Image (cartoon, rainbow, N blue to C red; front, side):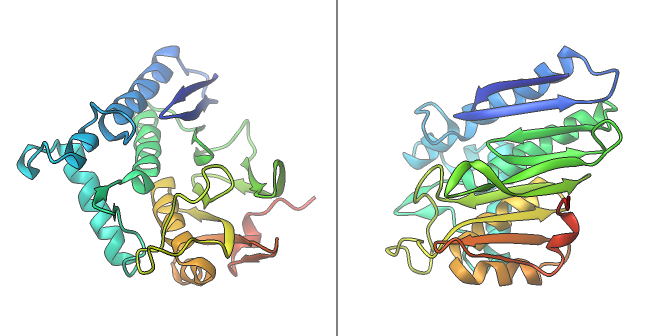
Length: 247
């Protein structure tokens, strides 16, 4: 059972391979993403994050979900030497963490219902579980110079994969240590991690680091990365190849 819907300004695809998959299971996950969008969207004037940006809410009035996300953002900032920072020009934007966090939570919702073989894809960041009819899931890494082409095909099970870059949204990530300088040295960095939340937050931070980002991923236990620079050259971590489909 597979469906795609446009939520949070991007396509979100769910596929459940388990035979007892139901429409209700899909509806519950899609409803969760809608609720996340209503709370965290920086484009909706009624969202909680928009109210925080306008100074309309005191910290004591934040929802439990908001407090959780802001705490995770601060943890990530500390873990990345400040390269992950949700404050920019006086505005708070936790989007660099929320998507991966929400995908992981959605995957956990499916697991709690007894599903073992599925994937959740939100805007190209993906959590896979189990297998796809007996084989590992295959996930493509897009060529930032040609979005219709994959440069690598990954073979994954029970992992998360996330890509940060400028090919789709342009310059939306910044280096907190040099906020006035555009990030032009690299075009994309894809991170494989134990789950998509971890992969997503570290992919965002690694991209902000520029060319040094791939070394940061190399030092993270349990993670692998693949970087493409502005000259179309690729660099990847020492264990990345074990996830690549070789034909």
